[in-house]
Length: 255
Ligand SMILES: [Fe+2]
Ligand SMILES: [Fe+2]
Image: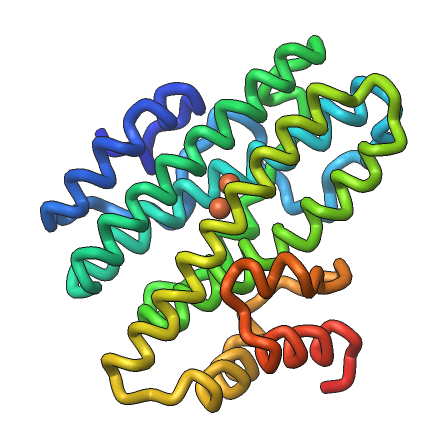
């Protein structure tokens, strides 16, 4: 059984690398409609209200939400490897490394939840990120959606979370986890930025024209994000000034 169909979260972390390696070899793995979960899946609108970060329970809940995101990031990495066997081999090998790193982030979050006296499953989870992608996506669509839009927005959100945790005296260990994850996510987004441009180049597409037009087409497919664009982190993660400006204008509601 491959990791998308395994429900137990710890078993999933252990098998993800194997599934990725087997997808890299070109094995035809099955992609289920929904990845299996050992906890309740609920639309995020139906999730219980979040608690403040000054309480241990609020911190555990935040790590739980983050764990669910990391789990989906891991599964989306594997899904891309399965769905795009024709993608450049070096892209696929790098994606495996990114996916293994998502597994490490997930482990950090799960251990952090346990250290706070809570456990995985204490709250429901959603699969909104998994549902953002479609089998019809092209490779350029997928890179934009997962690594530049979803993970890019994660960089913005992670940075403001770190600032909120700064003001809380007993949140040191949680802050360390979020800081490590957000630092490593710069590399994941940069992976998306580099390969977006490389695949544009090899397909004879001008990325300067393609970025705004492809993002405009994909907009209906993307979940809305409200966080302010973190210009500094986006530039570090390979966004151009024009791309950052486009994202800022969209988020400000100019179009
Ligand atoms: Fe991650
Ligand atoms: Fe990531």
